[in-house]
Image 1: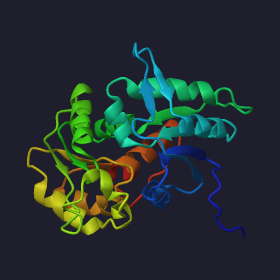
Image 2: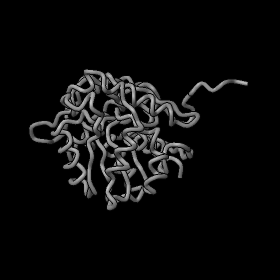
Image 3: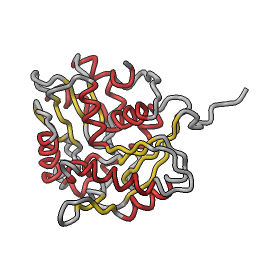
Image 4: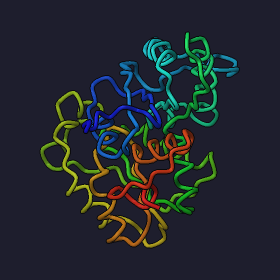
Length: 267
């Protein structure tokens, strides 16, 4: 009898992720169901990963994204996701669709070019909020999001019709508190993430008016506490990587129920 080898018989999903992060792949591999595989292309460009043209007629993809898309084009993928919350936030309204259009063009030039569903983390989170019937989410952001990115995230949600019940930028504790957000990853905070303090801060800060929680940031370690938060808050919780996995699976026609990572994947 053969052992499981993570072969993507039901779906293969390509993920653009930040070049120096480990969280996205770790969380995806924790959650993916049998017969689904995830394949990463690493991007080292600053956010957003595509630049609006002067007349905003479209966007120009960063070189790492072009390279990754060309590689994905020959891999018989079912879905591709730009797994970067801050790119969607900083790109603003319309950026997700413009990026999808450019990546789709590249995927169609591959030697093997089946229909590939392309999405972004911003659109995935919005779809997950709708599917979870969350109208007034409490938005939780990583500590390395600077003030400009936080404001861009708030504006992104507002522009797309989401009314927030409040927001929190996670406090990583006294060791990191005096470090500017932009230096946290460089100094190692991304690899020293702890999920229990995050859980405690969300429980303490989530306002009664919130009908759910959205944890943004694909490099923000959190899927291990989604179930616990839902039980304690009695409200649905959506995270960036969970939302992208769910959206990609649905677009690929995979309806497998996945336990342990929230109602979105379980129900």
